[in-house]
Length: 165
Image 1 (cartoon, one colour):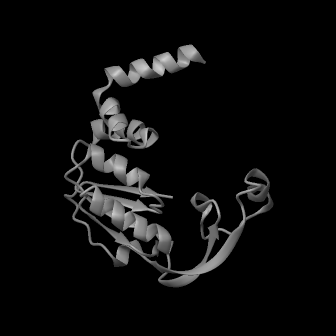
Image 2 (image 1 turned 90 degrees about the horizontal axis):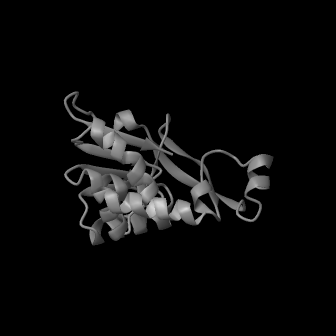
């Protein structure tokens, strides 16, 4: 275990991107995942974070592509407030949309869990309740939903990343 931690520390010290991300208190798991993608797509015009939750993916993506514009989609009202604050305090170019993306327009039942990372259009089943025993309590809320194709007409020449939860 100790050797594993030392190897991890050495990796951070030799990788400037990871070291800077750590110093900026960014979600390292996302930064690590996106570093390889950045080597394939060096410039990105737009980043779409569908199911943005706390904005961790958006923070990591913005760190690696600081000139891109962020589009965050989150139907939970309390998260929308936090995401708007995040964009403002970190001075990130972007917009938060307070609705879900779906294959349908309108509104639908959304299952909001106490452990909000589980929140979804999907109704909980027995496996989820068993696995997240103390965190699987939920309430049903109605959220607006829109179709991606009805919102954006992206140029074939633009470089975009879409993360969907």
